Image 1 (cartoon, rainbow, N blue to C red):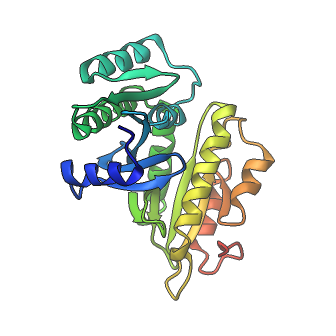
Image 2 (cartoon, helix red, strand yellow; image 1 turned 45 degrees about the horizontal axis):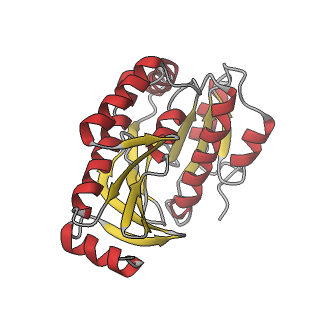
Length: 267
């Protein structure tokens, strides 16, 4: 029997409850899970009816997220083996970068959704094993610089966006005017654009923090020690943030200390 989107929604509410929510997403029902990627982003799954069979998939968001954290566009043999192990363990198919499982008549939709979510969670945790040392050392280097110059800061600040999505900003620095700082660092030219677009989306969603008497300054700090960034990357985030270059750390410090810097995020 063909299940309508309304039927899918009712089944989700009945079997899983308020921790999971469903919304329309094109031909799919987007299932917002309570699980999180290592950076705090929510793991979303997608459900679509094909006759009497439902397919639950992540639409390759997990492998896309993992790829964005790496300098390399290709997964290593070890990574692929670990992904395969996770899929076998949770009974999930890995097809064209997507995690997916089918819910057939008589199956529990809640059980299928849980299996796919568990696989996504386990695969995203590969980031802890394979995360780029360059990115780690870059944020550590910035933290050391801030400490040396007695600029108080919080690291990995979690903030809510206007959309309801949470964003983890690399630094919240408190001076005469507090600033939020995203560090953009990669050794891969192809990954550079994805990182820039991610930061742009974050600034846009967090723009309500850039208004009012205690408005925060938004700073996009590019690690330009690697020649991977183009002028278009800088221009992409300029309307929403102040662009700084790690090759000129004194200018970065000046931006942090200036109460009303001329380049402020725009609404």
